[in-house]
Length: 183
Image (cartoon, rainbow, N blue to C red):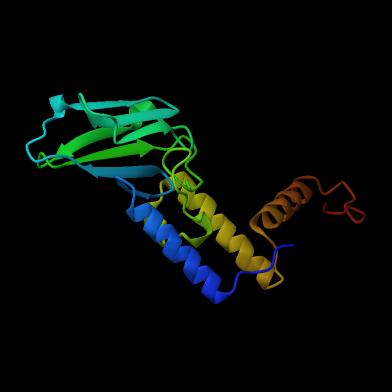
């Protein structure tokens, strides 16, 4: 088992990571759902001046007639039909790449680029009201079950099973449930 890095080693690693990211010809951020890449272009650049191509697993971005600023195999696959690009004020290109797997962090945009330590990512706290109905229900159920376990109570599934058994017993009083065991 590897030893935990010292505070000095951790700070040095963070400084190195920041320097490597700052040296990239583009800036990038991410959420669990998408990666946003921005890169500066010469003032007056129009969409028709750009050479932008991305597939499920590769990307190439630059100005026509010049070497690409960003090119390579994407760190992970994207949903091409849901990914877009735009040019802002004829100075900056913004790409929004929708991740195929929306439950993992990327350590870089393209393979071979300097990586970030994804363990240091501090995700924004989401609110239950931000979630769609199905996801919200699932999260609320998990939170309820966790609180019940902490208090020594029964989970929602255990409560549901007991309620079903109770109703079945009421409907069938002729059956003997004295030896019944809940699993």
